[in-house]
Image 1 (cartoon, one colour):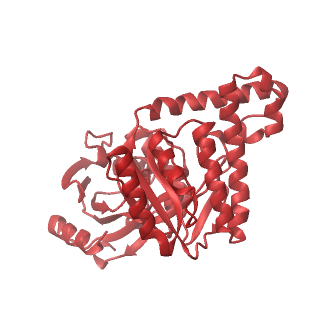
Image 2: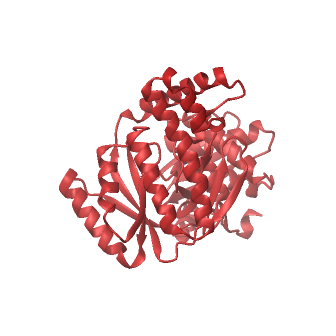
Image 3: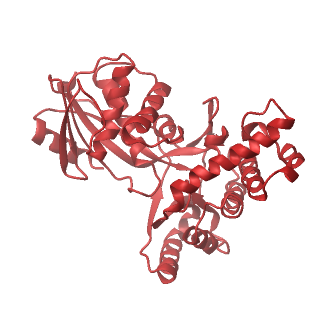
Length: 389
């Protein structure tokens, strides 16, 4: 987003020069539905972001303005609670978490906007939460450690937005590193950076423009199915606490006791963790084509064994399979809609985008959107004006 537009709007509304913070959305290269099974994920921060302009206002009020919605709202910091203004809850929730942790925050003004596509699964809400936390930490010199900001942002989503999300989105937004993916252990929160040297390839996201109503109910069903598999293995191996602790061999030992559907769900998660770990080794070797094959394996498992894909996502991935200039593709996110992520040869990306949009339009009569993204650094300050010091 153009920072000058944000600064001008801030000055127009509040007559001050603000501190500017950017906070990115994220992609996940591989590792879906592994997070709540204490497994691994491989996200990266991208060059689609939320930008926030903030300054103290010497009151006990929090005054907010959304550029994208062209709406303003005002709240008392003395009585923070979820608002009917949905977009405000992401900032209010973070302020509430900071206060509950014992940090002193005073009245502030905030104008924000961004270019993260809404509803595409690129975590605009996490970007806003993380940006708000970072901005308030900077503004009031709270010196909050980054991983603590991540936890505050996640908790804000749970309490004020009412979404029981995992920690990947917020972690990627804050901890992102240019040209690197983050291998995050969702059990311990230990993480490592792996280079994404795409060289002649471009990450292209294809947005189905659909979100099937199955998503939330099926998500809960999958969690329960995984828990049933863990319980069965735990009878034989008491030390087991999650699918993270279970090998395919261990699962096969109790296969006869499992519902075939439960077996499929659990085997996918175990295999997805293995795909991710071997995929990281391929990234270190610079083997993008090898990594792309792991992406296809991920999609096939999500579609056939975990059954969270849909006809639109499968169509987009299948379109790429005979295209030599696409080395990897898969659905990204929880499923039943959202985006596919594709690794496309740069010199063929325009051909790819035109072709896949035309094919999708012909099949579903939907004008598909595509986004070219690059891997960037996580949440940080853009500039500081003297007025905020």
